[in-house]
Figure 1 (cartoon, rainbow, N blue to C red):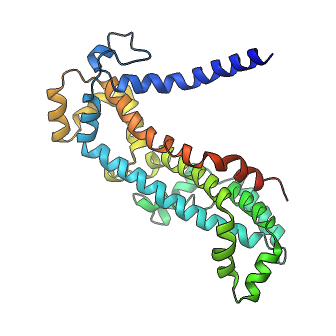
Figure 2 (cartoon, rainbow, N blue to C red):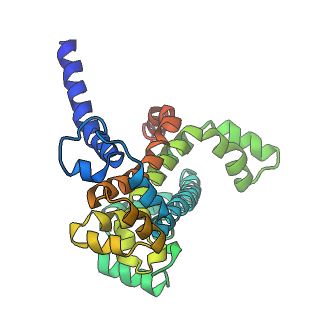
Figure 3 (cartoon, rainbow, N blue to C red):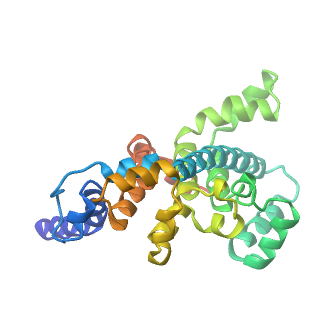
Length: 288
């Protein structure tokens, strides 16, 4: 029985991991050689030319910087705002607490749609600004519920002791509650960071300024076969010169290298917060 289970799980793990591994292999293989087929588990003709072209294109490097800045700023602001809201709603003495929760939960199921949202963001002056990545998604109701449940499970004596020592609500929150919330903060921060890092759709709607496009949106454009030639022709002069010297680089190998640059940074974060996953989510979701 166990042999069958482990065999099935191994097969599922292989089917899940292989496409990513194959893309990584292709990114390290010469493009001309890849076009001949047969590149599966190991590079047949190892080359770093694909990555040289990617890192010489200032447009892609700028997109990478936008993605990093959006992920860091967006995660920090979102976790801070969401945890503050959750802390307030965790207080049973708060008047209208249940009504506030109902209003928040309604937003999880209903929204105005894409066009009203676009008109709202335009009226707020967020179109073609960096803050369109941050402000519209500042509060996550799902994360707020997890935070709120976690805060309700903290011993009341800690906050009472802090108040006796002269701490107000803000002092108690930042000096007592936040330091005790490490697991749930780490877990929800990772989920929020993944959302910001992987999102390509929102910039494609609200951003027309190429200098504000994150690398994920650029990758989406590169992977669209209809505009691949245009994308390569729009590279800056340094990248075009590098591409001209490297006749083995193809659109497929270049797109795989770009995909790795856009994927590996967030993947590398997982090992550092994996130990918080089960503890952070379960502790913040079981008690009501």
